[in-house]
Length: 302
Image (cartoon, rainbow, N blue to C red; front, side):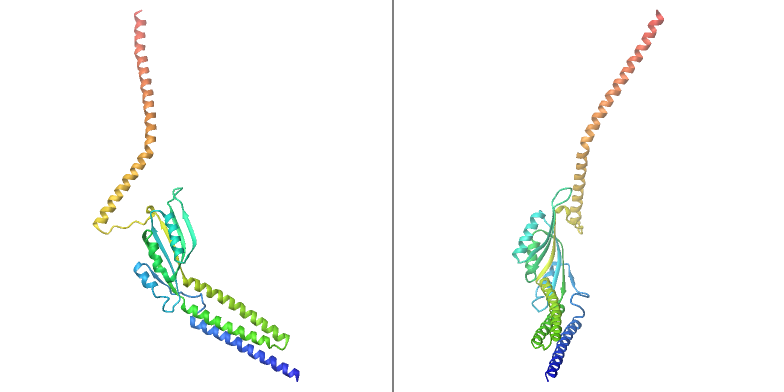
């Protein structure tokens, strides 16, 4: 009788464990099918924006309608003092509740111009306002924003995490009712496996949440010397461009003249010394030639 009871209990536990595992696998499979692939695989289907006008349309209301959107972008500014502008950009980011994940600065030495590059993580909810503050630091040369809709990936992770948590809870309940050591070991193995999968999915969930909550912006700060040249498209801009090129050529010639002037002075002195030496030698030869006929005439008369 006792043996029959144990067999019945073991069979029940095995059946319940199989149902729990089957339900978990089915939930994960359905979620993966609905999402069109793994959470981080495949084409992201992102959209690119190059105009500031499109920026507000891309950012405003994207999260308010229940979608999860990851925004990345690049902003290039020409500023008077790149290193000081980098300090102010860091302060703007911190005031907005973001952080600076990377920062590179180039000092104006060894033939390089001052420049700075920052990797900013900005709160997506206030990205438009923060971008306006950053753009006010200088002249906008380039602004590019890209958005990736990861709503289905987030929903897939949520469904799989919920299914795994339910599976773990059912297995824990079965563990308390295990009648044999073999059943207990099998349940502990299944629970450990489910908990490992759950922790991995929860890590992916935290990563996606961080990417959605904080947009990534690469900010490049350059000086006027490295600013892109605007192509003239009207008579006035062409005239201005021509005058600037003339001034630039004149400045270049003055620089070349300044470099060559010391050399010209030294060469002039050497040329003057050489000329004086040559003239002295010629005069001495001339005197010697004049004295030679006079000496010959004296000898003949004698």
